[in-house]
Image (tube, rainbow, N blue to C red; front, top):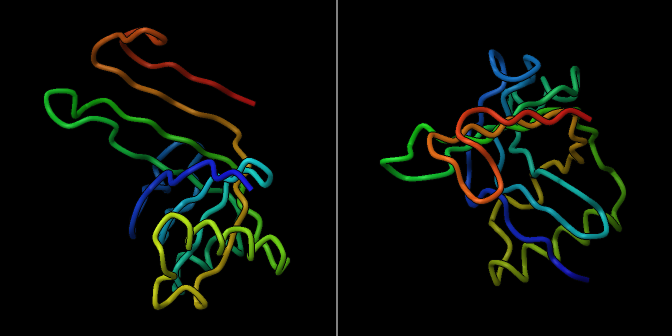
Length: 140
């Protein structure tokens, strides 16, 4: 199985309310992309996991560059669906092992969600080869 790689490493508290589409704020352990399964996120126990179960909207945002391009950013929003299938969880588990060499001590407490993408926003302070300066918006 080919790993699509780690999107965010370590624990993150990612903006939701007030962001694109007013999605839920996600506190994740790590976000994963797998070629066969798409985009997944492992969510820590707590209120944010409960919020996501009640209302599947989410929004993720990350800074893309260190200064002087600190105002560059990328945001993605859509819907999250909890994954109960053991085989799919096993694939993500194997990917974590491949990427980190071991599972996190709290791995079995994490809840797996699949993320569908409804829109993306890329903001650049300087143009690059593929995108112009300013906002670039994509919607499904």
